[in-house]
Image (cartoon, rainbow over all chains, first blue to last red; front, side, top):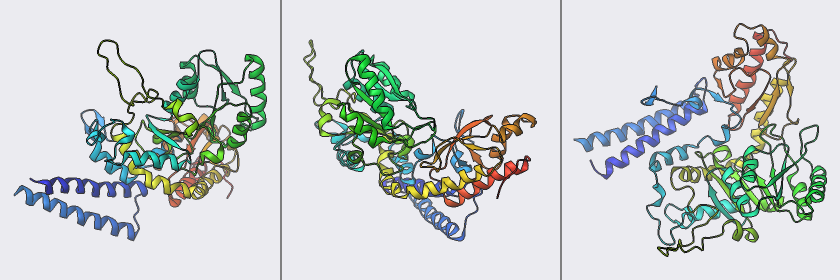
Amino acid sequence: MSKRAIDAVFEGLFLLTDIRVMLRETAPQHALDESQREKVRSLLDALEKELAVLREELA
Amino acid sequence: MKCTGTIDVRDVDESSINIDPIQVGGRLTPDAMKALIAYGDGYSVCDQCRKPFRLDYIRTPPIAQFHRDLASFVNMEIARVVPGARRGFQAVADAFISPGDPVLITALSHYTEVLAIEGRGGVIREIPKTGSNIITSEQAAQKIEEVTREFHRSPTLLFLDHFDYQYGNRHDVAGIIRVAHQYDIPVLYNGAYSVGIMPVDGKKIGADFVVGSGHKSMAAPAPSGMLATTSEWAGRVFRTTGVTTDVTKRTFGIKEIGMMGCTLMGVTLMGMMASFPHVRERVTHWEEELANGRKVVDALMSIEGTLIKSEYPRNHTLTRVDTTGSFDRVAQVHKKRGFFFSSALKGKGIAGIIPGATKVWKFNTYGMTGSQAEYLAAVFRDIARENGLAVTD
């Protein structure tokens, strides 16, 4: 594990924070409109990249 | 779900619309949440602390600049961060009040102002409120005259809340400060319910001290806040140590006595700083916040027997409401008694009302989206209808 892994951990946590905020903004029903869904999809894509970095670093 | 051990995850704001009157302005921005992740360790802002070893001199992270920005934000000259508005009150009280000094507050002042004065042995006198729960400059002038006759000197200090915690009513702070200054009384403006959610101009108001609450209105973790003042008073309230100890002959640089040295040395300050760009921007949207509040207030007023106890039309998002003639009537016969109301709200995803409250209670709509405000308004109407109360459309 290296500095790259540290950055990936923080970036991943920050991306999850953005999803958390989406839950707050849409409470209590969490009925996301299409643009909100698209935003969450894009956050999840970015999160998967950070997870991939961590897996690479572990290898 | 647990954070760990016996500590539950707190997900009130993820799962509900929170209308707790004291919580909504202190909810974190996304950037503050991220700062919390990175700066949670104890003295986390001290990595780059160099001579003269004082919080407001630290340049990385940009804490020194933040102090200048804070002063500018409320149009004052010098600012410090403090562990909550109450510690701002205390710092000013410590610098100004001697035992036996008369000190003015108002009939709607927060209890921490009382404690700050009591701690110094000051004698508290209250400016009364009108029948509409407003503090006016006329009453302030009258009280100052009374106190001056009683003590043969004018009050040492006046603590004045722009918006009070009980009704969220707006008080004529500029007019009252003008009157106080005619008697050479310095005034502490308590902006716990204004600084960070609406524009505040300390100079325009005429305040000698502006106090704000980070965790109440600046989207920051508790305890955090700010104290700003003019160059006239800064030397007194932010006076530095001059002591030399007798045995070790130690001195303590430029530590500020009233601040007890450094104040917010970690995550509270970083949360406050991370939110600040958003806070500075969000105060320009105060009218939209009021519009959201109106949707909810109008819904409550449409329910038979419900009274708005705060001034109307509303000038703040915190509102006191009396439902003795509506939801409390339902409570008298409901199988859940007084808990029916909070239970019904919870069932519809609304949090922040004290369980069992059906007579007089407060709520705050600050920070909700327009659709959340509409949803909340509909929830109040629906609960009324479901329980046989008449609702006017």
